[in-house]
Length: 69
Image 1 (cartoon, one colour):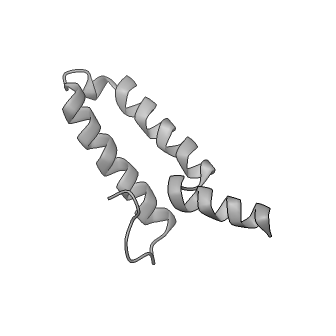
Image 2 (tube, helix red, strand yellow):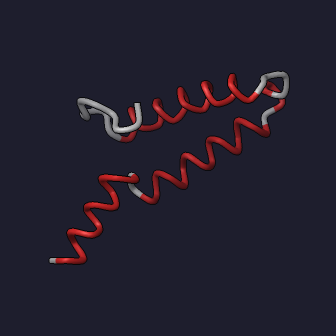
């Protein structure tokens, strides 16, 4: 029971670990893309936020709210 509660709390607070890996992939792909070389850091962060939001919407289409946005 304790391990299940710890796992639930971790996922509630930080998100699912496999989704965090996908977020890192999105960040790296966006930073390395030739089409985003002209953007500054703030613009890239906004673009990454949009891409991650879309990833979550595709993964969980019936969720009423998204934890990070």
